[in-house]
Amino acid sequence: MKNIYKSIPLIFILIAAAGCKKFLATSPDQRTQLTTPQKVAELLVTAYPQADYATFTDAASDNAEDKGALASSTVKDPVNGDPYFWSDVQSIEVGSPTYYWNACYAAIAAANAALDAIDKAPDQTPYLASKGEALVCRAYAHFMLSLFFAKLYDPAGPNDSPGVPYVTTPEKVVFGQYSRGTVASTWAAIEQDLLAGLPLIKDVSYTVPKYHFTTTATNAFAARFYLFKKDYAKVVSYTAAAFPNNTIAANLRPWNTTYKSVSAGTLQVLFTQATQPQNILLTETPSTWARYYPFYRYGFGLMLNSYFTTTPLPTATAAVNGFTAEVVYYYNVPNYTLLKFEEEFVRQTANANIGTAYTIFPQFTTDELLMERAEAYANIGGASSDLALADLNTFLSTRLTNYNATTMAVTYAKIASTYGTTDVKSGLIACILDFKKREFMQEGGVRWFDEIRLNLPVVHNIKAINNTSTYITLPPSDPRRLFQLPAEVALSGVPLNPR
Image (cartoon, rainbow, N blue to C red):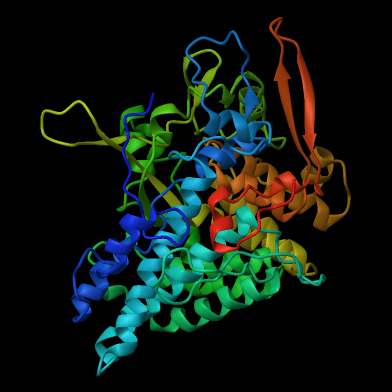
């Protein structure tokens, strides 16, 4: 079904011994000696996970539904079906947790190779920007692994459950033994690398900055990291560092202006374009997500379309539906899409019919960062609650067609009426999560991040042949909220997640 090929990454668990010995006899950057700052910088292009997590996290979240066994033109695939039922994914292909695990450790291996070369350089000064990037890349890959494969950090808890192996040196042996450590040790190492790397980042060292950890992207990463750690003051400060003088408002997705006036095909290109200021960090990965995401059986269907096109809050305009500038398209009911992605297909040769499918993914965006700051303000409370409300209105002002701040703004009264609570903090967070669920539909991880971060139950329907639905729930304490590690990690002494 998938015309896609992949190379075997340098990783400590999945390479065959014979090939491994030969490969490990050479440098990890395809036999190039890392003897100059330019060569180290070139290696770091591969220090970003070249895999998508949207496929399995979107299906696992409540931004997916069962479209039904009789739905026409729906794609059935274990990378979509298994996570929908919160079963261990029986695939190692693109879009699977195993593929993402391997890609993260391949990225970590590249970062470690760069850091090793920098440590050995007689004069490290010309390498400092690359050192910063390598440290942040290493922190990011381990952070993403920790979100999917380990319990989350709890500032009020012991955090003594297994983390993920934090690898800081180049692999030199086949199937070396690794420890998962603890959640506490994993998150401490992530924080150490992130804080050490951030001040070294230099934007001028990048040819195409949006595919690298710029100062803006690194601060956005820090804001997300501290949102998970529930250190809300730092979320605010790192957001301010990413967009000084509150310029974030001028860099949101222009849904009710530019985006509303372009064709569907143009929107697909704009959404992941490096020139768009709302895209803070992009990655290009081998992935068939752009090809299949509207057509997976478990995805954006009739029920979610009804939710998406329902007014999120009362406004003065009865005709307002959902975020009105965000147009839902469909190929054939029940396959709906927001047309956020366009596949890039690279042929093996000019006239070949086979090759590799790629999808560009936004890893950090201004819109998500604004909502993270709003949530931080809401949790801080007091006068900061008004700042959270202001962020919600800034967000809404770029979504609603013909937005009128007087009649269409979010107010505490509207929040209380819509979400059934007079508690300011609870109401603000409910509104933020509602807006994010709609905004990041079909963007995979963002909704899943919120569900695991806030221990939200996840409810899925199961459609029978007669089109009736029963429902299943993934509760907050369920061990299946952690994706399973690849079975082969046992060769390196790494225990699997409990089931």
